[in-house]
Length: 470
Ligand SMILES: Cc1cc2nc3c(=O)[nH]c(=O)nc-3n(C[C@H](O)[C@H](O)[C@H](O)COP(=O)(O)OP(=O)(O)OC[C@H]3O[C@@H](n4cnc5c(N)ncnc54)[C@H](O)[C@@H]3O)c2cc1C
View 1 (cartoon, rainbow, N blue to C red):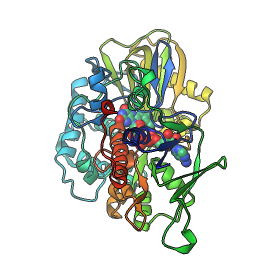
View 2 (cartoon, rainbow, N blue to C red; view 1 turned 90 degrees about the vertical axis):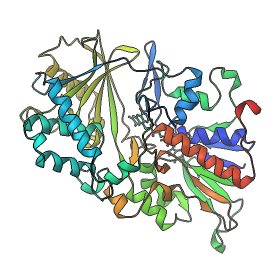
View 3 (tube, helix red, strand yellow; view 1 turned 45 degrees about the vertical axis):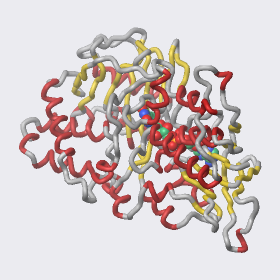
């Protein structure tokens, strides 16, 4: 075997495709009983629901857009309005809310990015000191909370883990539509494209991917006698199976590496890589899909933003606190009876732990707020994601926090391979967390898979092959 790819999410599948096209012998080892990782599309009614990634974020320089758009796979969002709902059920003034959010955004845009400060610290300070925000203090406080949750800023409990201003400057969004959907097919279509199963499943590339292969140890030889093993990299799974290859590409999520790197790698990883694993951070983001008997929201509603006020939060018990962390309800394209509730951070972790009955009761309590102004219909079913509890993900995505900057850590260090003495990359690293400019998104993950495949092709003396030249 030339290359083993460990983990078959977007990064792993992208790497397998490119290496296969270059004529290398490749094998994918995936711990779950499906490929896709944080891309997880399920059939739901006549359409699908995405439990993880759902949208292609942007067009320019976006590898997912480049792969999917020529095949006509991407759809644009319907025009929509945001509705701002106070936690007592009243509607907040739309124009004022939009203006406050725009002002917060503007403050962040014009801030000095070259300092070790979290975005959250910065916006909180701006909101407390700038005149613009003093006119509507209660509304501003609620909108600040929405801004922090919606942008997954982190750092409220531990400022060291807040997204850094510097990282914001070096994260490159792709220009163009941010919410391109998969026309009801779901994000897993990207995996079909990468494996050449779309449009014709008979044309799928014959690449071997073994499921239920949980890798527990990756061993390689070094110049030290105690580590001289052959062939160069050996991979052991929890079921006892062993595989060997000239090189491996590890695509495990940052949060999984944090938990497992000490047992996973033999010899241990170099200190600078461990520093990056420990110092980069990750966020938890969950989705709760709520299906109703019939839709009750106005056709124009693209989003309900929930503005929590302290006195309304106090009506919830400690066990119910997670409900007050839900910050938005969105209609779902191609699912006319479904709303998507967003929950993030500690609230998401708490939501994952409540029983299913308590989840449904909590959703009913949340919806009672909406009954003041809307004819809310009965709930038919509820479906939640549990990414923090998922041992193979533990997170939604990685980001640069204050500790990352302070400790001199980076996605680039994380992405550096471990070389054999003669310069052969033995253990390579891909996955969204290893993307310096495009971490957090699927397009960053795919790019990273292609990047590491190219690295190995260069080292094996293989040239690029376009799919239609095979
Ligand atoms: C709720 C949510 C919403 C999101 N929304 C979007 C969105 O709309 N657009 C967007 O671009 N991005 C979105 N993201 C982020 C996006 O899903 C990720 O950035 C991307 O899917 C990561 O791909 P990856 O290949 O780097 O990692 P993963 O997809 O996590 O792949 C890693 C693989 O490794 C496997 N694995 C783990 N441990 C082992 C082991 N020991 N042995 C073998 N295999 C192992 C896992 O099962 C997994 O398949 C979202 C994420 C979440 C959770």
